[in-house]
Amino acid sequence: MALMEELRWRGLVADAMPGTEEQLNKEMTTGYIGFDPTASSLHIGNLVPILLLVHFQKAGHKPIALIGGATGMVGDPSGKSAERNLLDEATLAQNIAGVKAQLEKYIDFNPALPNAAELVNNYDWFKNISFLDFLRDTGKHITVNYMMAKDSVKKRIEGDAGISYTEFAYQLLQGYDFYHLYTQKNCKLQMGGSDQWGNMTTGSELVRRKAGGEVFVFTCPLITKADGGKFGKSEQGNIWLDAEKTTPFQFYQFWLNASDADAEKWIKIFTFLPQATIDELVNEHAENPAKRILQKALAEEVTTFIHGKAALEAAIATTEKLFSANNAPLTEWSEADLQAIEGIVKVQIAHGVWQSDIDVVTLLADTQIAGSKGDARKLIQGGGVSINREKLVNPAQKTSEFTLLHGKYVLVQKGKKNYYLLTIV
Image 1 (cartoon, rainbow, N blue to C red):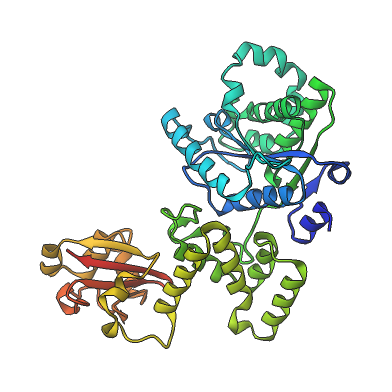
Image 2 (cartoon, one colour):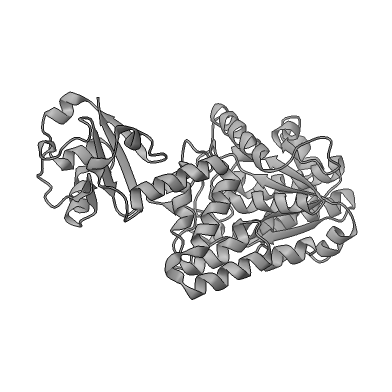
């Protein structure tokens, strides 16, 4: 199956410039995707572009991952309703290092390959270009009328917040990236999310006007949830690819808890399973949805890709321990069993604090299991908190009413899926 055909059935193509498919079928093509270093880790919202690069390389093409060290200092208005805070250089450097380390795990940079991946940082070329040089040599090729016609700009101009010149110029900076990669690395394709269409086509136009070249663009759709909720968010916030920020257990649980409709769509997008296998899984799931066959396959495939087989096995073991109806009661768990629970949040509490017999509302707030005492009270009143698998019913309950497991442990559950192991030290 040709690359674009493969990506289409997976739901990974939103729009493409005329000639894109012909270019990919004609020869090994160099293509790039940009990653904005707004944090020290990528999150699952970045998974689609990562997977695009993997598919691209597997199909025999040469991927370039561009880290926006320069454009990260400016801010992209696409999909934003207000100006974002700009990063200082130290934070940006830390973020770039984190993103670089992650990308190197997923695409193949082996220089022995004819289509070895490359990692570039646009700060490396922008740092040597003066503002006047950029205006004279690049800005003159794109009209203000052309830039203002872009949806990302129009929405901001028509909104209450407006748009600064800094963010207005972003599409020209991103366009220059494409021009630079075209002239220096014969890069003929840019890929990205559908919200980037305006910026990406500005790049193709700049290549045409400034270098007389022909390049191509295709976008993937922005991922949504069937219930209208935001993809990639949990109670704790973003689902990160960094195991320190989102544990493999939490990561696995996110995919395992997908709705049937989302699982059927996501298993095509986020895994490399072939079409025949996915069709078979969909049919099996339809026969007995309660077995959650699709969700389990999805969670296993994505967790293995991001964190590896060992982390997946640990996540499954933790899931079995915490959620299996056949598990032994907590009083029968050994201390080793408790300590071996991987991926849940672990909090230490001073012995004196526990012995001071504080109420559970204070306990939940002080350990940051709840955002505040008010939140803790609401959680308890709604039946949303259990201690050692006993549901809390009274916000005035004191710590003295609970038996410590092995004299030092407390297992707290918030909601259906969030667990915390408190250790009294």
